[in-house]
Amino acid sequence: MRHLYPAILITTALAFIAACGGGSISDSSADTQNDGPVTQLVKPSERQLTVADFEDVGLKHSKDYKTEGLPSANGVSLFFWKIDGNPVQYEVRFYDSHEDAAEFGKSFAIEGAGPEAIIDPDFARYTEGLRDRRTIVHTRGSPTPRYGDFFIYANVIALCEGRDATQGAERCARLLQSIESDD
Image (cartoon, rainbow, N blue to C red; front, side, top):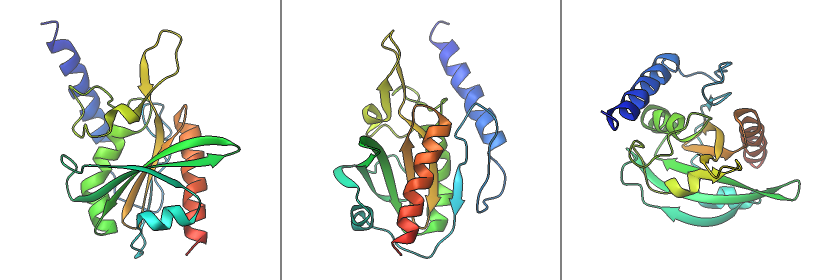
């Protein structure tokens, strides 16, 4: 029974997230609740972004993850970018098209970003790089989600580091602006 309680909580949380995030994909969908990413920005584009596009705007490519367990993704990379002198981490997931990213990747992005992100390997659907999606910020040493928000643009989903959803959204907006201006 003790092991059943966390499973019930996670299942209930996922059902709630799915119910709240079930709207149509638009240029921007703001979520004003405190239980998930703030903006969940979805912006269509015909561009086909690559690792080089992120490097061109100043991000440092750190490593690549396997895509096993992440439907339709053809690459996942970890990047760092200095913002105001501080390194900020981004996980970027690459797909064949914007449609694939939005259709197959959005629920995984919701699971990977925001204050209620699933960072327990027993419950996360995509576990590759899970250790990098956690950070320890509390004095008790409890792991918390590293990524505060995400965006879907062109053929990518980018999870953006932030101590909370608001900071994650700000960092997502900054990266998206840099990528769009590099077009």
